[in-house]
Image 1 (cartoon, one colour):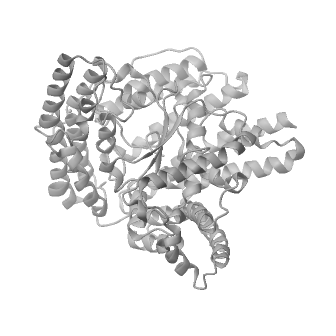
Image 2 (image 1 turned 45 degrees about the vertical axis):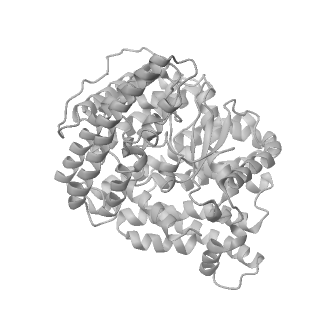
Image 3 (image 1 turned 90 degrees about the vertical axis):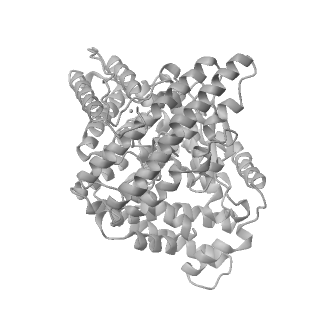
Length: 598
């Protein structure tokens, strides 16, 4: 899942001609709330002003024309000061007198503030985007007319036009920050920068043919009630801003990355090679797992999980009668025609819809509470399909925009079910991200910062845990689908080994790719993209397995302790009832739940 997962910078604003850092005023205002509800409410109101694209993604239209420069030094200083002021307000709350639910709210806000302040000690602004994430990659999705930016009224079209006008300023600030990173020796690996350059020059973004440019999409799909005068007005405005600002911004960034930044980028792969790299990586490992586990402890857990899953894969190998080694079997299923039964994208999408139909009756026995938000399965857009992975993009809290499961299918005839088709659906779609995110957003009892908040270890951990429900849903009966499930489980176990290996210097990129391919039935291009993702986002890949193991541990603990009083649907409902939580907060919450069951 992407979109609400990023720890990077999502929005911004600066002019195209020079790489100059124009200072922006902080949008923060002083507030003196008197209780937890008002503290939480005020915190989130200010947060959305700082990150207005998140508001847009949530269906909140108030800031749809805003694109502040929130990677600017002065902005960051104001942001830190604001978080510190909320911490002071929290310190005046009488924690002991709070209800159990409100103690969870307090704990989550306290954790969030500490984490958001701490990250800036490590200067993430020096790397404002990567080949895997950041505003230059998400901006076209907002502007395509198919994303979360609305295009229904004249104001909607005007709002997006204003954002497009400000976009070159953000790119200018990003280049300035990349330069600061060079000066402070915090730079990306060359192996990643070479992937970013063609992204900035993608034809759908830089073509002057408006019939093909993604940013002209809203003009090609005007609302039926628009007058000809309105259509003429926005057609000219959009064409002009695309030609004069959007295309030059991307072109200029591509040139900067190729001719300046690439020369200063590093030859190493892990964060351990950066100044204070060990401390930076320990922070990211802690932040993404929401635990105090050390990289060494995480690495050992990964090695244990890999060994367990290899034993399960051996059973599948025997089931299909393959006589070679496990590595040979993993390679064999990559090219086995039986694992690639599809001729076109319609057949692949139909199979995913078939999975939904199969699991639907059993969902009722596992969940008492289900989302109201609608759900769709779509093929990933062509402009990003080649480098994209399957993902879930959340719907809006009012249910007007559905949650969408995106599947990249650059060549449907090579779509291999042993990549984890059934488990992928359980993870990215239902009951994984769609249930968890939708129920969280629909829960109006939660303060907004929790309704729309995200912790990777919980959110991705829940989705990864949902993969393990496959046998209870009647899935994984086909040995190739079972191998796909084990491969998905293995993927997250390997991530623990590879992510920690890369960023502590135990592994190079090439070591990591080799280890990856020896355990997972990916092709080399897929394995390379995964490993480079971990290089770009240290620690992000750790949360899946760590969170999943924690939820499974809690389930098994309370099944054993409660016996006949344990109801799986009740357990799932409680895990999901207050949205994403740091794992230690989840522990306390579930222990209180278990006491009530007893």
